[in-house]
Length: 457
Image (cartoon, rainbow, N blue to C red; front, side, top):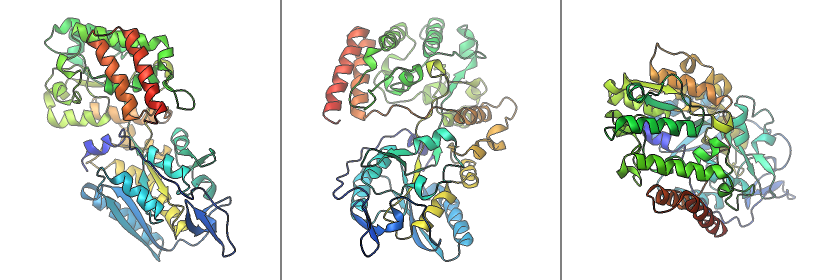
């Protein structure tokens, strides 16, 4: 998997529909069996009490499309684990990650054949936890949280069938956000590149300065609001959904209308290319051509510029994404590693999952030159690889900036379904085109979102 594709998986949303017949954690029988998600399992896999047993035997480990680019790394991790635990064997399954992945994962879980150790994202973990198919790691190993940054360990909590929050995942790798900008273009607009704005509206004011100075010769940013919703709202402290997630409430905050009005104003004044309003293209190409002042917020973008446009890279600097009302950086939920409650060798599976996600192995993978990802363990983020800055090199500065902010980053970003996100985006686009007022666009966006939420979309 390419670095760009791997990074994109950090923000992709999978929709998992799981018919949980016989779901939940059952009690033991006379034979000592118990049930997890309708599957018969060893009694030690469920309920209270620390998981005990020898680390031995065979397990399966499933990733998604990693073998082509990272085969050597993961084969090395597996070999190291097997050497440390004689009598164990890890079979690595690399799923292609196509559009049938969700349905196949569901089928495997219901057939009691899901891999012993599996890479999952937040939506998948939510559904599998509710159905009782994942090991309660916080109970089965009370020390499981120790290596991880507290905020990332917090995201590893999902609700079981009773609604109780339990830890069924180990945080694995994540991304980050930052400002990437062309110092020369900002200087022409009278924007001090050494003083990044501290609020979203402050950033918008800088966009406006760029638009006035550029006079159509270059732009501040891209227009499509899909890149900013709900990330901007979260950073501004605007509550997007109700506490139970069943209704939209972003329209109740007057700052939402102000945000839409700003977007419409910027689009009208030429801060954004007119043809980028509905385009799915990120700023990569135009930024590399020196035609956009602000690049992607993804740290891997900085390396992309370094490799593909040295002349623009020489003019590139990085800064802190505005903290705004949130008061700290935000970070999306990481990718996770889970252990199947249906595993026949749960002690071995848990031991391997913790080995894979420990500080040493997380740091080693993040150092791979083919990927730009960040670890979720405290010790990894303190590694010189992230902390040492080489001169004024923007890429090494970006690594340190993101690594430092991940230690305290907020990881409770709002998760919107594609349908709800698109409903909000389309209304903002109408306002940006001058076809609706900002107030009407927000009102209609909230109403359409609520209709979709009621339908379960």
